[in-house]
Image (cartoon, rainbow over all chains, first blue to last red; front, side, top):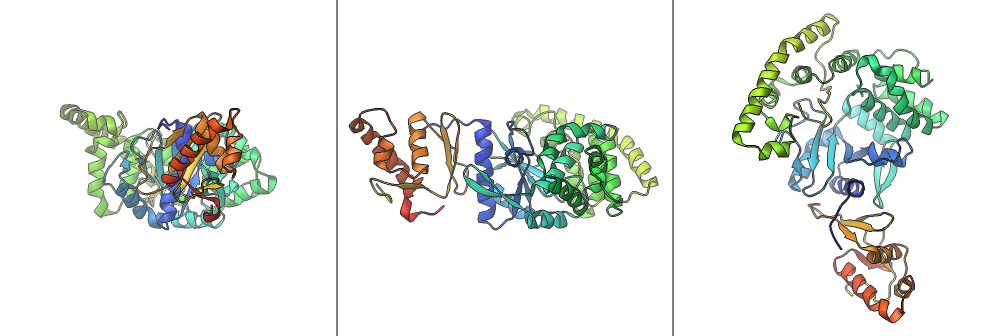
Length: 323
Length: 97
């Protein structure tokens, strides 16, 4: 026997590990994207490094404590309550494994309250098998909605129509009944307006305008208008955070070098004190310089009648939690 | 052999996750704190493992190999004992998946 591990093998095994760990502690979780989506025909069979888990939002803190009790390492922002500072996910590494585990409480673009979204998805869940173990996955129609909003959030608003091509395979894998169901699921999850143009492009009728979640929809649009602008991301987090969480938010934004995406958290941990100090200085300068631009964006949004969002989030890079 | 008969059949323990690729099997025990690194079996071990998963007994496992049975049997017996000792397999009639 030997302990070599390829990413694809590790991904399947890590799915089974996370499912076993969470279910053993009564924490409900749905496994999304990656090999689970492939097993449902929603995605081509390509290697995926991550395990994406949508956790029952009410048990997110328990899940985080559990992972940390195992000695799994937080990818960035150690000791942070990711929900409190408006991050929708927290990334973990199992020491020695090539895969990362993204623990999500919600997905940006699902604008309904996270607890409602999760309850809806859980009620309709399916069983997927990974590494000869059963785990819970969203129904294919629901999974399409998650994949679509996830794909869309990385595209600037003006390129929304180009979202169609990569989603074609997922859409065509659904039966006509499931395609109609995907539109209904998008409405239930508050993702109908974010996905309206995509549904139209795919030939589906999205139905009447969904008036609910208008404020969250504007925040979603604002995030997409400012893709890659970490100042805007932190400002949105600021607006969504409770007052008591704001000092930590500021500390993370300006001081926590592990959240700076110019290096991985491990590289930052290995950096010299001087390198970290220079990184913090650079991060602070960049953050301060970005504040006027972010405030202009916020004022423009306020003129459109955009109140503070409710823990809606956008990531600032390939990985959750970087800035 | 602890917890399993000498002749099988055996069952893979419910707390083992495993992946079989074209030429090998990788497995890991699902036990807290879940920090154990997976095991990659070599080609021979992988063949035996997949046979075990299919519920084959010792003599059936021996016949999977194109070699003299008396030469193959001790190796398989030792391997199966090791798997059993590590809790990765057990007697088929006493485990449920």
